[in-house]
Length: 240
Image (cartoon, rainbow, N blue to C red; front, top):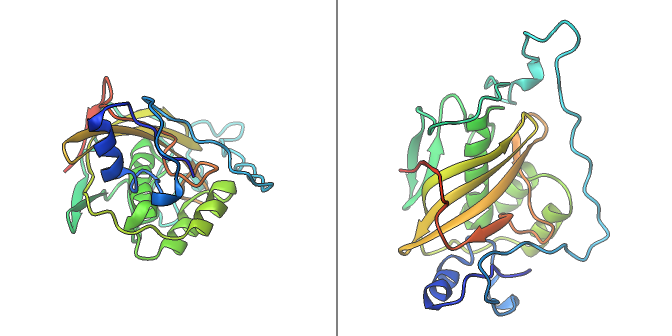
């Protein structure tokens, strides 16, 4: 797997050591980081092909004003809205788990344990953050989380083969988000994070799959689709 390649300089090198594991790093198995301001994952050398995404669910003729039952999540959270977030979800509280914070919302999820999110922009946002944190070292049952909460395909297979990461020792705190793209079937978001005094922005994608949002892993097993060692230019404040 490739390491995240940060901007050249001492501060970036320190950040790589502190959050490399959380951002998908694998320690000594990686090459030395190259000097760059961002990175894009490379395709894994595998002949496995990703399955096509489930067909979008849309209202039929004459049903334009109804919300199909399939918009409900597996645990019954209602969904279907495509109204983009212009502010942080108002009903979110933060659960402190040994210094790590997880968002909880009665309307957006999770509705069951760490899974079952509403098919809404807020549900996608909470799913992207929660699942990525769990996959990258915070899950009590790594194999179950990857199998049940990431999209099947090359990335999932690679990540299961890599095994669980050790729990990071340096806490990552969310400071904000940008919902880059949203449909009722897929969403892409960026999280503004901070750790050890360093700012990071990482992008993630989720897909609606079997009545829940699942994280889309990169083909090399990484959770983020890209990271930069800087805050977003514009973002919505969000965090504990």
